[in-house]
Length: 435
Image 1 (spheres, rainbow, N blue to C red):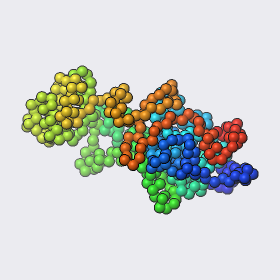
Image 2: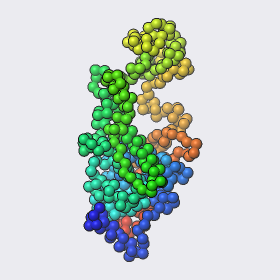
Image 3: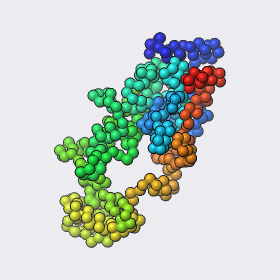
Image 4: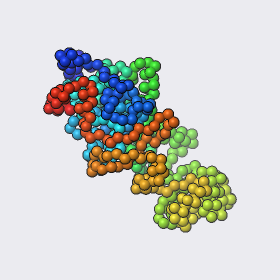
């Protein structure tokens, strides 16, 4: 950052104002490092209770990563543009729903980062932060003057996490979306059915796996900072993260010179291992994965082929997969979905109904394990909706209770007040369109 940059000029002006007010511009870091400790419950007693995260994120990847950190107790401040904020806010039913899920347990602050004052305020937030997560398009944060090289001079301990489409290399400037990573990584090539067009995952697989890798890497960088005292820049790519999910197929292709094809719900290493239609026209996944489970499967459904030489061992079942599939298919049509599931569960055979999202909403196990939290939807038609809580459990700390996703900029005033701005300054910023 040059000394005549807009950011420098704005910070100099802010410092002059602070001197006039006999107020120093220093990190607040109250209550164990949180900027505004009274705004978000749940930090106390959690692993990241003393960590403040700034999010320059939109859609899924960045927000999902910072949500994970919030679930571990971090204070997350989502910084959005005053004009409309996160790109999926009030965008569509699906966009609204994704926002309401991945933005719980956060504060929302609006700042115009194209303005001198907005950038100066943002730098004060950076001075008080431990982590920054961003998933803007390549080059955007540098153009705004809030890239890692700009901000490490403000806070040398900052862990700056960039979630991008690709690591540095031939693809790094290409536009990237979740399906781009799924297509390039090979996921699409094995998803769907033989002879049919490739199919993307039914969720944002690449966005979310990159977010998970990002959260893990941030935790590693925080741990390393305890030893070194310095921060670092992390880059977590959608493409390479999704390739990591395909690791065993990549190893298989090289070892056996065989490229896997789409396989539906089946698997080339086991049989029977697929979805089958029940007598009441429902789908059930069935997958006995050992010879013992194969015989338990046969006994549970009254099949007398457990020791048939065509199917007695896995190798035989794979050799006669087509014939076996037809027998199992016909047998499953003799039972209702619930009968199939109950018989096979009681026999210790891997089985599951193919639930739709209405079934998942009402799933008794999720209800019994308190896996879903009710929040007030900020975007869309509003109302109370249930979304997944942090799924892991620990004997060392409780899960954070979910808070409602924030409306655009709802925490701007208290966060700025925590930084030391007074009501008059905040009003002037609003009038100027900075907030």
